[in-house]
Each structure stands twice: as C-alpha cells, then as structure tokens.
Image 1 (spheres, rainbow, N blue to C red):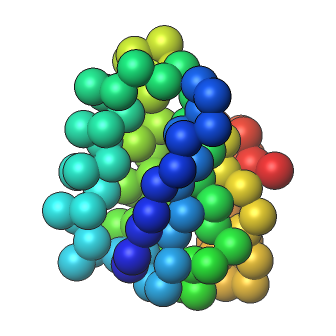
Image 2 (image 1 turned 30 degrees about the vertical axis):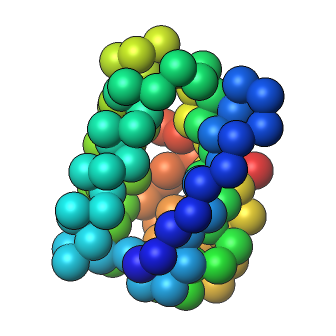
Length: 100
C-alpha cells in the first residue's frame, strides 16, 4: 500500500493506493502516529485508489480510528469501491467509522 497526505484547513486527507494488508503494518503505524501527534481535528482516508484489503488491513483501520477517538478527533473513510467496499459492508464498518 502506498499513501499520500494533504492538509486542507483543519482536515488531513490521506489517500491509500494498491493493496492494504499485514505487510503494511509499518505504514499504518506511521499514520497512527500522525493522528495521535498531529494538531488536526479531522482525518479523512480516501480509499478510491485501494484495490484490495484483508482482515489485517481492516484491523489497522480500526487502530487508526481508535487513535483518532482517543485524541478527540474525527475520522471518516471515503469512496471505497469493489472488493474494499464489499469487505467494509460485510464487516459492518459503517457502524463504527463514518463511510462516505
């Protein structure tokens, strides 16, 4: 998985590309650190460029969400498609994290 981030006002947008799974734990830890230590109050993860996600990737999204909640920050997932959208639906992610 590759990712990039941009800041627009008080919102940090993070765009994921490729495949998101267990091997991406170090990158997920970078994002968690950014969320915990960053001064922004809102984070948005764009999933439109993500082709696949596995259960480890879903777990890492939950850890990113936990970091946001612990810091009183908001997190939303945006634009999932294909297999990623199906995995989020099957696991009922919309009950935990806002998906737009």
